[in-house]
Image 1 (spheres, helix red, strand yellow):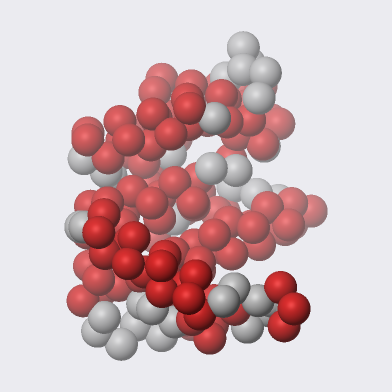
Image 2 (image 1 turned 180 degrees about the vertical axis):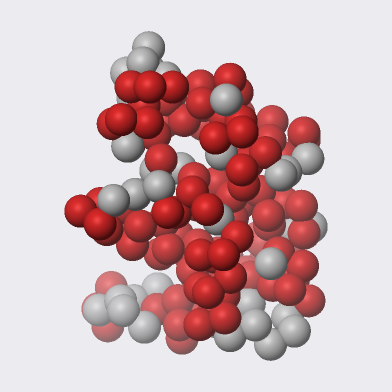
Length: 156
């Protein structure tokens, strides 16, 4: 998915969303009553997609006109993204982070696999380090990207 995003090979938003649900199994961990968490995760993933594919109109379509991100700010963000030098591995890590970040909020999951954690982010950090098999998207990443995600989780 990251490769397709970076090559700008015409990946449409609906195709991206369909791929997300196929690739990130963790999004299926939530119950129907936790739909808001799924929606937040998808919004984060779409934000990455819109930035990488440089789709300002889609990124801002739900923003009220008075609060809409200015085109100059959008350009500044794109310049920063280009300076960072995104690789497919980095984009994959960002997508995985967005897809898994909320699973520490699932109370039964946290109680079973990270009972000592007091915060959802801490629970997720503990789970990916001690039970990575439970987070297959994380487990598929190279060690460097896994370490980057753990570092980000612990920094919060």
